[in-house]
Image: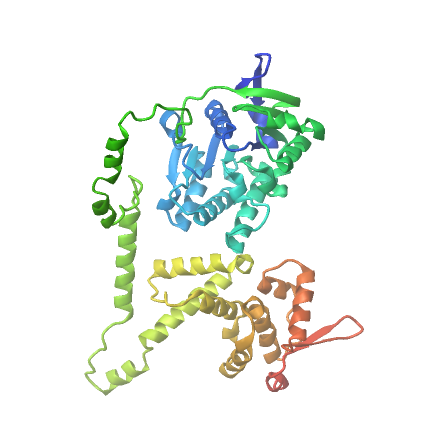
Length: 500
């Protein structure tokens, strides 16, 4: 099968080609300011390689949905699916080798980032038997792999950086070849950019971006000015899949188009000033008094029906969860009714069981709190548990209790521990409860492996710093002997420890 595709011509009119097989092994970084032709380059590359390899496009602006008009790409509207559906779709995409465009333009910026991160993570986590070769193109990559914290939440930033780093650093063994395009190299995380071995650098004006681009191309700093003078659609290429030395290329034509507005000049309206003024002010007050039109929704989506069905299921579950009190026919029936758990107790029991289930899953404590809370909300809706009045603060503490397995303790021990933990901050609550549970049962301390699991870390240094922090704040007392043994006691639980 032909593995070479032509992306354009050099200054001498010779074809400049990209080796797709080599690209799958070495990845590509595209950089260019707005208007440099970066999206045009991506489109050319995707069109020319469409018949050779599976393609997955992360499209934050909806520019690449037109690929579906000429090729076999499937457009996935990210705003029309739940988180679990996006993950399931990604798994099926890898299984069936479908070329797709994940369109995110209907979402807010942070929602775009979270949706793309979960989608990429699911692609990466596909089972080994589905590790087929695929190009994964990410436009506006500085959004999904920012070099510094911005306005997005910290857990969102960690999630998307992890997904992008996995794609660029570890994706090759799973068949995933990342193609990242960015307007600003300085805004793109260095560990993501550094994993690319092929580069196509377009016009850029800022000194810091020019210097980084020149360094990647192996050019001297004084030659960096050349990057500033590049015309629209012209790029400097380098890499094992392109050329062993820098080559200038003018990108060829494309068959599909994006949603970019016309940038050329157009004749102005010829209406006289008086008519134009009347046109601008005609019925202005009436129009301003009307409510703003609703934002258009995607033309084809099954989400409303799914939401209605889900709400109906939940309402039915809530009705079934609170049955009417049975009429007592005799004394025996009345006694049985009195001993049955109340609806509120049943609900709390179902919530506790769900939390214990989540806490027992592998890697649960390593996930951000916001991710866990959303997963909890999704599962309660799916199972019809009327528990949605639990906010994130309550969830964090209830999840910490489930992780520490306080349900194994006697009621008096649990009540004492919960009383002591009232003022413990959420970020260290789970390991504190784990230590307290061991102390109440007369044990010396949980081992470091257990503390690491509960704390959600694989760093021994973090465990040492955690114990130092808990000891400085007076929550625990650590005793170490000369033989290296360590015991931990919890002030306030001495009486329970003495009983064992």
